[in-house]
Amino acid sequence: MSIAPNGDETIYMVTSNFGRNGNAWREADFERALETVIQDLLAGKYRQPIRVVAFNTAERWSEDVSEDIAREIQRRCNLQLTDGPSYLREFVDRYSQQDLQQFSLRLV
Image 1 (cartoon, rainbow, N blue to C red):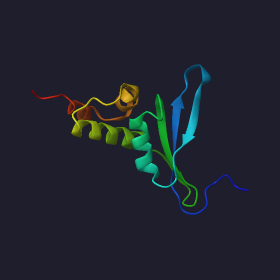
Image 2 (image 1 turned 60 degrees about the horizontal axis):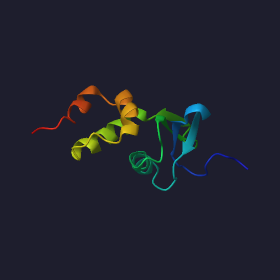
Image 3 (image 1 turned 90 degrees about the horizontal axis):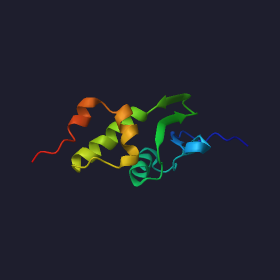
Image 4 (image 1 turned 60 degrees about the vertical axis):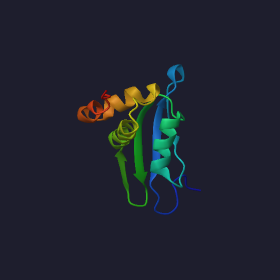
């Protein structure tokens, strides 16, 4: 039995920091993987995320998508005029572009 997914599915894995217990990879739901990862990050399912990687074994590729995920989280927070969850701040700051972060300043 193979641990690789059947079919042509893109899988997303999130590395989280569990403090003294170290780092671990956590798999996202297959059904709506990319959106699920973003929603789960915003909901706090992944505390202290370090990196998000996507891979597709059928197409033989993998990619670090941390920057794309961080920019999308920052975009959604900007649209809601919020700073976003504090547990995501380090992840978003590390991977999102500075010009997108500037947008989050509130205008009075």
